[in-house]
Image 1 (cartoon, helix red, strand yellow):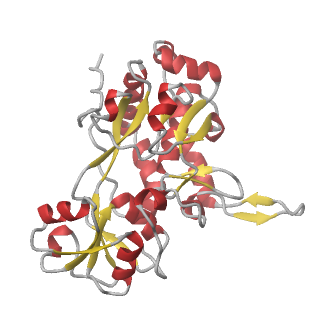
Image 2 (tube, rainbow, N blue to C red):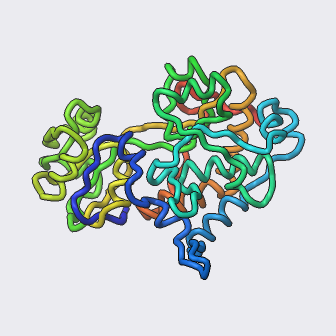
Image 3 (tube, one colour):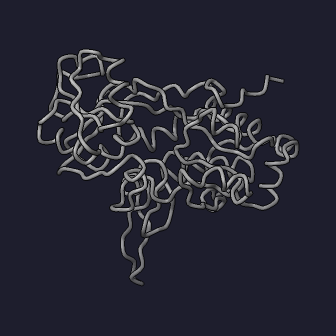
Length: 331
């Protein structure tokens, strides 16, 4: 798979720090409104990418009235006229706020906006969401104390977390991936790393994952992401292996790095929901609908796909991982 790439060395401290880095416009440049200055000196949205994104989030499916009324969770959201999301305004690629227009764009942002319109209806999906910044330490708390209705924040489904909350999905699968310099033509997947020097973060799960996927690779540990990226860009190593979510942000922010192949481990993202409610059944129905009608594919193309290119991947099967609720049987 050919993927767009990076420029000067990028300093990226950690997976969470990178994904929540507020520096630069990130995906907002590619997806959110670019702006011109009007006669009054204020920014005027003019980007065709912005128009395409608006069309996308405002053209998804609408839930049948009886489906909404049958769900206590969805009925409360429709009555309130807002979907309260625990998410991010600074997660590059997945949910980033444009500093000029204050509009959120990205893969997770679009999933939340389309879900809000699916429940509430209307012609302006972006206006139907209310974002509360969620961190790895606060996500379950935001749900258990009813601050938010749902958490959509590159939230990996685990059995431990599922003891406290419910998960719908998975709706996206990330995992360990391979980054190389754009001019490399001899590395197209993890199996091509045999005999190659590969940057990994010290103490991370990447080294063990690499050893299992390609035992003949030569892992070279560095202290952090910043050092790994620098080693790749200065050709101290042949490749860099880390979670794809991190590499997406690196590739989107640079011009000399590209991601090759597909993730070779699984990191399934789910929508976090209140425990023991009817929310997961309803949201699984929503996910099934947007996957079957092509909305999920269009969201991927406008966000992640705009960076990495290639064919639209198959979304992970709903309820397919431990901790995720199985979809309700067809009526």
